[in-house]
Length: 253
Image (tube, rainbow, N blue to C red):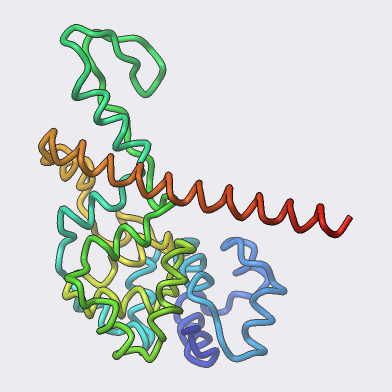
């Protein structure tokens, strides 16, 4: 749910008093036309608050917590679980970890900088979000009834909720509602959607890598296999959609 324009303007006056809208847009990277349209509609996007917060060295999660919709972010201190952390590791990084762990002893690896070294190297993880970060995160915290609880709490139809997950997106207020319904840290979904970074959400440095290191070889291989299977289904569906589109065009010509 976008933030009320009046509440946003009060917040902005506190963050950048006596600063023109043009200057705020210039330092934050928010387009003046975009901000003007949001203010006219009376609804300001969360991304706007995040961009301006970063420009003025304010934690975006703390900034969002000043608005009624996200006020409980201020009191959320639960750390991410290992399942949440691993869900934010891209499939390609999981596969690299499998290769590193299974590399023969003394095998010459390639480090993150591209220089050769003796022994397998641990590549640096790519930052979230990744191609399936939202769905993976929800799956990681789902006890089997999570989607129903979120639907009941927010009024969002289950099929609409699932459609957002399939598209690897989730509205910020829905991400927080999902965290609340699952009983996990409220900022986790904001990381999965890419609205805020790990550090901004309060995740410890290197937390994802540490969670990955705690996975046994068997669990890592099984998880990688599940990710590949899901990727295969997605690719096959895309290929079928493309074939169907081509057939339609052929019939129209």
